[in-house]
Length: 452
Image (cartoon, rainbow, N blue to C red; front, side):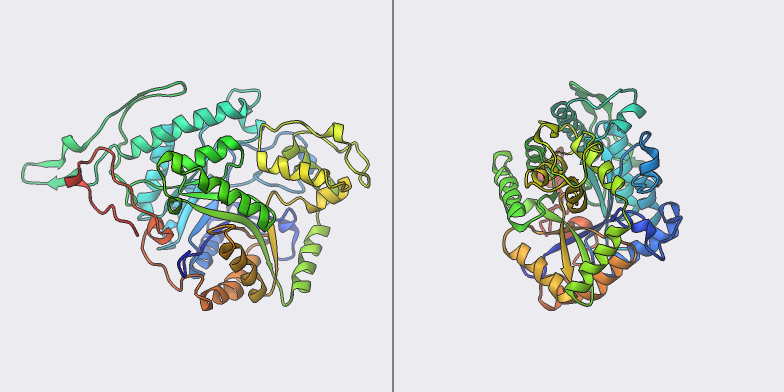
């Protein structure tokens, strides 16, 4: 990777991604619905020159185990992410703005319009995280008893993606001519109607919006199953990689990049970012102690609830201080394959149920230490071929973000690993990604489709 090209993005949940973040002294009670709070967060992230500010989402509240969810309220109180990003876009000028939208429950036209709008509003900084959704709570909001099978969701996702991409190319870049003498606002020959009829969607029409500053918003993905990796190799610009260890991350990185050639893509067209939680302290011992204190705030039933969600079976009847019997481990997953695999791996190490609950971190590594020690670990992963950068889930906000930008960013910059300023105005430019040409435009009409 060239000097200064480490990619750094942040995954933001109101009080932070640790289960006990809302319980940490000083946590703001109403942060989840306070747009001014999010403005302060995104401005801090931009001051640190992060590539993007990302909001995960699921179109559902939990409707079961409410007593447990009341203690760890992930996704139970949150603003719709594209709306929120649009609201905070004007408070920043360079940082990318990414959000999740599900191909299982959104119509492609809605997705195309939402993210094209965000790209215009932000002057070219939008990113869509393509997901299939992995919980039955969402399915029940949309007339289903449970999610369709994993493979079928990916078939729908692939078709939805291609419809969205086609809609983003409705207008050629120079279609709007604003000729007041004729008068004519746009050139009708540079408007292209989509006529699509597939297994899941029928769309005849065009997007009622000029082509966006990036041509098409940046595509994020996080699929870790074989189907997810194939889809990412074909379509993604940025992938949130898996692996709680460097060796696991290298395996994922090489596998994913190795799949790209069959789709006519070069490995440099895709950035793989390892998921990591970062805890900065005055020393490594101090950082680990902070994490231990947060962990102590989490009741064991919360760990069991996350296990039930991601392993797709309830183990709460088992003794906490004994290993999990093999016959209680499901054979397959229909939700998050990577989380499922992580839990199964911990169980098969012979750990007790309590130990599995404490160690499970949703396939993210944890970097502990001073700013210099954390930078050492980040440098080792990137130089060792484990990633092109990091998707950072900040455990406690705003504290963890401030500690990272104040202590780790300057260390990375001093080593020439991370830029000291943004190189462009769009997310694609800052990620070093080409602006895609419109599929309908002849070579003479292509504008600003440069490699950066």
